[in-house]
Length: 422
Image 1 (cartoon, rainbow, N blue to C red):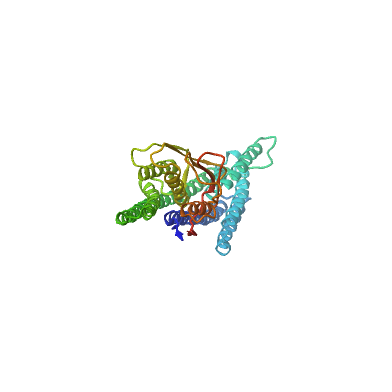
Image 2: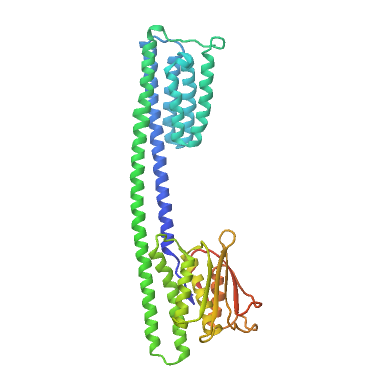
């Protein structure tokens, strides 16, 4: 039984990102709720005060005081009810619709397009974008239409409204309207948005620091795993030196090469910035050249052809695929291309749809008899090739029409696997 450990680093990284995104979403929602509730409470209070000012100070007795009072009381009740149903969208839309209706009414009866209270319509659009982009766009289009409608009501031939503000109170009404707008925009929206932006910036910096620390830790883990695997390889090498039996010595060498093929994956993850995937052309190139030197020496006559373009694989796929390639190349060098003969090994990987890939790996050696079924043979190397293809949720077939040995492996990028039975 051969065990392949799951990629705990990648899963931890994904869990960290998910947790951080969840925390950010919670913070954003809390900020939205705080801002909407704060705006509602302040605007309700100001509207009720404005109603009293209009009636008692400005001597406005028609429409405007009632509109201010209605909005203030309705919005206050709507905000209090939110504590029970906790549906921000409902609370926001009820407040916006009430504000829109009352603002339209007050604007039409306080000077139309010339009323300073018309700027409250812009605050409704601003509040919409603070909540969601979709609501902001809806209210923007609606209010643009209403502004044109208000302008049309200001035309002498179309107007059906009139200014209910006494002439002596017009300037004071204009002043209070401007103060109302500026206070809501500056003290409520501006201050809260600045505080929210500052908190999100701090959170972003903290998360970036956590990610950097986690990546440093993962790199250290990959580095230690690589060192441990190299230690195992060295122990196998030392042990093999005391063995005189050629067959046993070969078994130790094969095991050592399998360990090295796994160590190379961890080394590449350690050496590169991307901790989730490795560039597979470089890995196959290094692995193949190492195996050729290991089994045929530095002065060999083996030609290596590699065609792998823009293929990056996660560790859960890279390791079993690397072991499969290791077994095929080892068999080719030991049994297909014998002695110091000239030979050629070709490896090509192409991506199909989604996570599907095709590996073509071959040599021009003597091959092995067609009556040998590599799927059921008791030979360890051939059995490993078959089971590793199965671990990759793929299939492996041999093209007997080609010279030497030619494998066609279809596989997909997989998640963590626990074990492969041999």
